[in-house]
Length: 415
Ligand code: CTP
Image (cartoon, rainbow, N blue to C red; front, side, top):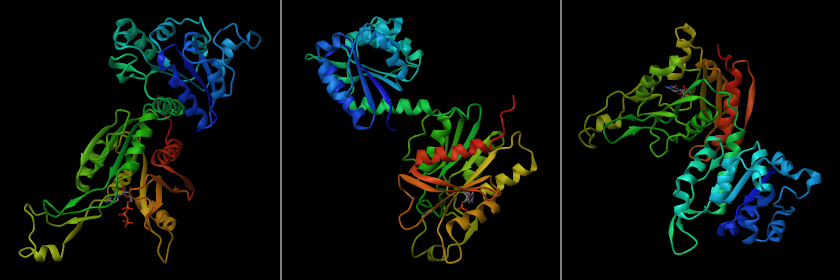
């Protein structure tokens, strides 16, 4: 994300000097910055400093550059408005809808995301007038960041300290990115499996796999941000925090646990994504006590295995009977290696047909690829023979590419 027009608003507080670092944060990332200080802000940092850092002229009054109708132009041209520091007085004026200087006029005109980073003494922050103003701004979809807790201007400390410029910059860009996400899964239910099942041999040992669950959780996060009601059935992903966006997470251990949980909720879904790595087999016998090397050498040395249910194939089979209230889009995942006879993509095409799903996301594994890594890439294959490249990116970026295709496959919502 580069090339945004960002307005950095600066109100009159001692923390105004930190706005200089915030301007730097944005320009270093390729964004164009216009600084709009209040008159009081210029008592702390001079206009020349802001002009030199941003490379753009600085003005405070609605009566500057009147011929260019500046009091509306700055807000109209903005992709993002970030105010740091925001004083109690500035937030009061914003909440009242005032436009008595260029910054408040810009806020009234702007239709882009507005992010406010407050800074003031603790008493002023906790004053009911300020808290009411913060609530009003948030109700209007302005993002008011919580101030940091720490040393204030004098010897006192408490909540009211301005966040560090990097924190404000990251938060503001995340708000901008969030606002660009389409809400094309509004009113839809999405079920996602994630992680890798474990099949117990005894209370200590199990058959498992290397899946981290992060791609499944990224899919859940994207689906929730796009408006879906998301349920995740997660196998052995305890080190991952729940995905953002109010997702319901059911934690399971084995393939059979996963099959049971998925079976309970599958019929009501619009989309089912089997991102979990499900163990194909499990030990035929699960010992209640730990097997011992000597006494149980037979059981340990010649493991008897039985096949697990194929959850994905089972889902597409049930769908074909038409007993569900909906006709969900069903997506499979495959981590493949090539071999002498076939490429990973050949294996993926055969697997899509075998499993009967509408889309199979395939990626190549082995030689250090994908498992446990932060990025992913691969191909999406479809029953009509189409193959779409999944461009390399973070697991969230890959999730967004998959979800774009899922949305295309979904029938329209019945009214
Ligand atoms: N899957 C499933 N139930 C299983 C095995 C796999 O639902 N018992 C799902 C996975 O969640 C994934 C897809 O099927 O979406 C492909 O998984 P994979 O392990 O690649 O498939 P297998 O049928 O086990 O094929 P292979 O022989 O290549 O392991």
